[in-house]
Image 1 (spheres, rainbow, N blue to C red):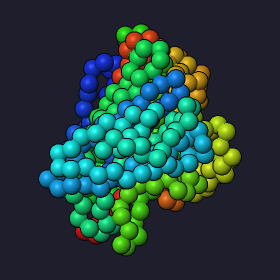
Image 2: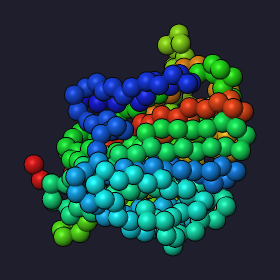
Image 3: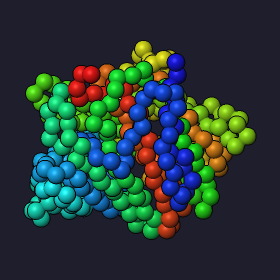
Image 4: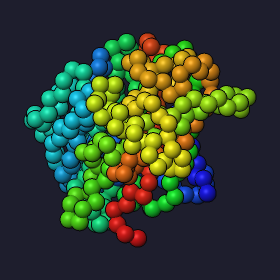
Length: 332
């Protein structure tokens, strides 16, 4: 049976909601407590802010992990303490802890990538769900991305792999640029260890998808295969990742020739940083992007992502999508 997960239906500046069909799989949580929150950040002529709230009645020690795509997906991390109902905003340009002290993490000016924030729970323990949050990415051109942070549900059931993810897009309101961020993650699953996300093995943590676009007349245009991974065009692991993505795919073999953390949609709405396109040569200004999962890394437990649209000047919008593959914390 093919499971279909519908991404957020993106019409710029109009918030929309998640939905699911097929009866298997889990959509992301963005407004309820969780043990894990996942967000993008970008300091390339941008500023990034991350707000975290502990909604639990107990104090929490959280682990903040920052993976810089521009530096071979290198991890910087620190721990922080939140009292009950505590809220703190992290400025990724100048990261201070909840008590106002330096975190010890200093990111370079061109850093961009992924932030994982996790509560300290042990694997196989029923976890608390204390964390909610949101983020802002402000561009020097004047537009801004804002969204609630994707939060993993406390327990994700094992299930058949969801095969298809989709999102709508359009060029209304002068939309001319896009940012499609996608990142796979691994879960720490060692007995006695804390349950948290990791990208320690980039070669084992990726998702390969076949991309299609459907126009408003329901005509399908075939695009190409791409890989979402914590890499940029300078990462020396790209060729090896592409080989792994083509070996024994699910359900077919991937023929991807490009791997990246970020993409643009097509030639009408390209990537805001000049990155690769999901559908090069395509000029449809409004339609639906279909991502069909073809393969994933051996260590991949979940796949999160965000889709941003902007007019290159003063207006932008961002929402999230989600794919999961049996990431659980407790045997059911």
